[in-house]
Image (cartoon, rainbow, N blue to C red; front, top):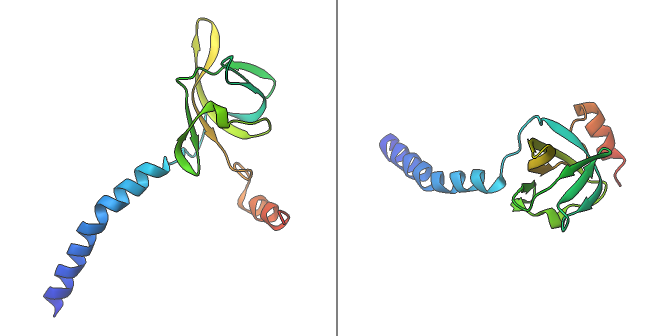
Length: 122
């Protein structure tokens, strides 16, 4: 009986492994810290520009945009007021976003602040 249980457990694990790897890859796991964070003040995806915390930054169409609900998104999904984290580099003397993550409203708050914010979201 013990050997059958071990075989079943091993088989179950092997069958679930591909699903687990797919799920981890498809969620686009977020970093725990970001080089830069802020709120979007203005976005003009067609012009390739974004203003975050009063700073004009180049946002090329090649920049990767991540959101919690799906692996990748696009700059067209960005809206004024959204909280974001991003990585950037300097290109032709301009700060340019390489990757951008949409952050939940409570990102960066302590656990007690996060809980109290959730209590008042009704």
